[in-house]
Image (cartoon, rainbow, N blue to C red; front, top):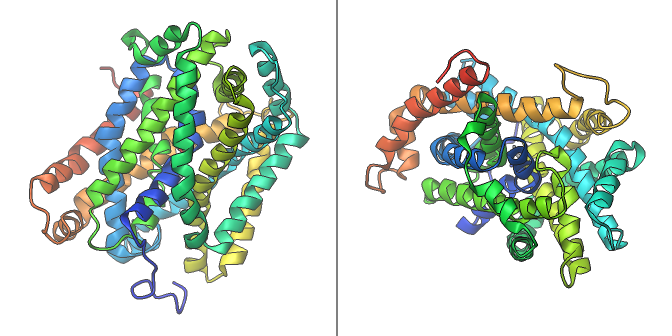
Length: 456
Ligand code: PHE
């Protein structure tokens, strides 16, 4: 650990509960909600997927989030250092190392999509969507994301933006602004929802999202829903360990986890409600894949008064939502590098951004010139997207809950969850049962089921 960086005394704290929620929700709410959730739901049949997803958020997401917060606040340390501190001289710190690597892989393909949102902000400003129908919007997206120069250009801009904020420090900048910008994003999303559900044939889209058709539930659906829950809540790679380490002793961790999970899920569902009616109204396919949001949203804006301005503000806010998430991704790596390898924050940020950029450019180009290059039958982008959300994050989450449930002292975990026994009630008993048995078993069963090893 770096000298002079005493993790006990000098660490900063979140000043208020609202600050904690804004930071944690800022990490959670991002492209995962507005871009990834609707497209994965579309590919997995809609309604039934939504139900399975919500079940995973409550049953696995909240306990796993609480586990990370407990590890962080107890150790007051980064994702790797926390395991070292709580269980010295054991291999548990490798869970943190895996988290750092996972964050890296996520950031790579995340920056591809974030680059798309920058380009779409630009297109909104020059009023490029004006008068376009569904087919033309689809063609615009198709041409753009399969080309080379433009998507890579925006991606690099986005990575530079993220790096600049991480170098400057998060506290005074991003936190202050997200407190205003996240509620604004929410408001615009609500307005979009109203327009979407009054589109002709909106019922079809709502039915697709809310009517569960269980014949469509397969091992893949369940695995995808679990992966999406981890991805959307920023779980399984140490973001919430890091943020938990900045939370003061008197805050109620259960409240934090509950509120972040609720808000994150609400935004995802609202995004679905905004997007699916448009999918049917514009004659698109729900299983259109990663482009779904980009095909539909500009079309909705076209059909509403003031759409020109709403489109600009919306895509700008989407950029902000992506930024508050990518910052948390990069921060995990940077905190690890500075503390474990004694390098400055600035060079840690620059070097890791460079490596992310190389991998990220490969992901971007995998829609175009690298389209025939496959890893396990998937393009680079799809491979990164799938392997992180559906495999690496759940495995990370699995070990994190095992650590809290079976390895940490009960007196320590209880003290964190109940604020030194100030909070009464059965919450600790329920939590312990969930992290010892329910969550690890659920993750294991989903894995075995999805690879066909067990049948239900
Ligand atoms: N939760 C973020 C989103 O939904 C993505 C993310 C995943 C951020 C993992 C940090 C860690 O956009």
